[in-house]
Amino acid sequence: MTDSRSISFAAGPRESVPLAVLRDVRKTYVMGDEQVHALDGVNLTIDHGDFLAILGPSGSGKSTMMHILGFMDKATGGEIIFEGEDVSRISAARRAWYRANRVGFIFQAFNLLPRLSVLENVILPMRYSRECDMREATARAEHAIERVGMTHRLHHRPSQLSGGERQRVAIARSMVNRPGIILADEPTGNLDSKNVGRILELLESLLVEGLTVIMVTHDLGVAEHARRVIAMRDGKIQEDRRR
Ligand SMILES: Nc1ncnc2c1ncn2[C@@H]1O[C@H](COP(=O)(O)OP(=O)(O)O)[C@@H](O)[C@H]1O
Ligand SMILES: [Mg+2]
Image (cartoon, rainbow, N blue to C red; front, side, top):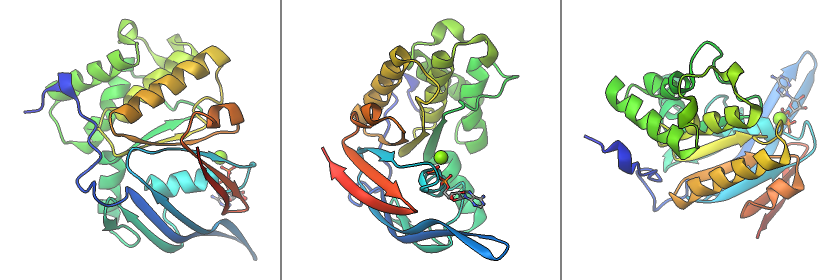
């Protein structure tokens, strides 16, 4: 039985290998006669516990990269090793398992389900993953919600929250399954500067617990919080800088 009060965000079963290795990863969309190379040969090693920011102009492949890292989309070429397993050609069921259990998502538009309360939204990923019973799921969700300072809004609907509060709930939801990696696509895009600061603080607190965070942003000031900044252009990594 897991003690929900001492959630440990373990980095996954195989800490001795990098979290993810991408080799010559490609994603090509065929649009009539035209091919769109959304990812055009990406090579990248992501270490456990790292905090990466991905910068780049609109259309440079940032979201495509996040979808592929998050098992939401499949690459059309190259190789991806995730937590030591070659996931380039795994079954749909295995992909779904990774998506449900090893990845947490935070989106710019929050993507909370409007009909569900804060608590129900945060419980949802655990219902998909089916790795714990309802009692434990509730306890874990309450703990995650406490972490983001939203306990006073457990039974509110998303529409009854401010943008910053919704994003805090989205962060609670993303971490509740104890994933190896949090993928955040412009998590501060819709927020004022005070809330941006708060969201960054929360993301940084996840790192302390061994989580890996990858964040897409347009904002150089936001990217400065990351330890490693990757600049993308035309589906390629143009620059990869450690701070
Ligand atoms: N489903 C799709 N079908 C066709 N082209 C797509 C699709 N998704 C993205 N693209 C194209 O791939 C490129 C990269 O898109 P995206 O990863 O969303 O960029 P970014 O997030 O950096 O703005 C863009 O040129 C975009 O138009
Ligand atoms: Mg995008």
